Image 1 (spheres, rainbow, N blue to C red):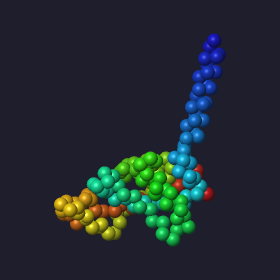
Image 2: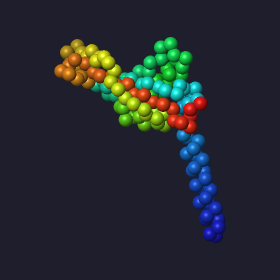
Image 3: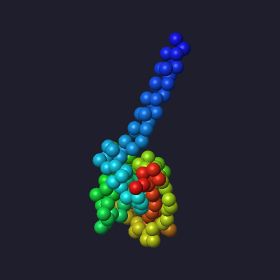
Image 4: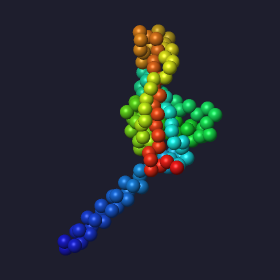
Length: 148
């Protein structure tokens, strides 16, 4: 009796371990891109917005050899049916799940102009007396086990 209980417990632990390992990059698989297709470094620009209740995510992909993959990653991060990143904490955690480590963050040089609705109220979170919002660039690098 004791031997069968031990065997059952060990079997359950093995199945659980295999299941966890198999789900490691399931978000990437479901989005039709694989971590191997993405570049080693990614810079993601985010900007807080009141209107959308979250952050606007922009990945500079113009003239990049990874343009299609970066567009897919940007869509994955913003899509409400996928990762639905709503703040920078979500962004850090989502990129970690996708196989990236956080490297650094810095403010973009420009302050984005403040947008106003028809009532004259600011649509975007504002800084510096209503001048506009800051964009933050966050640098991510593939985790060592996923690098080429």
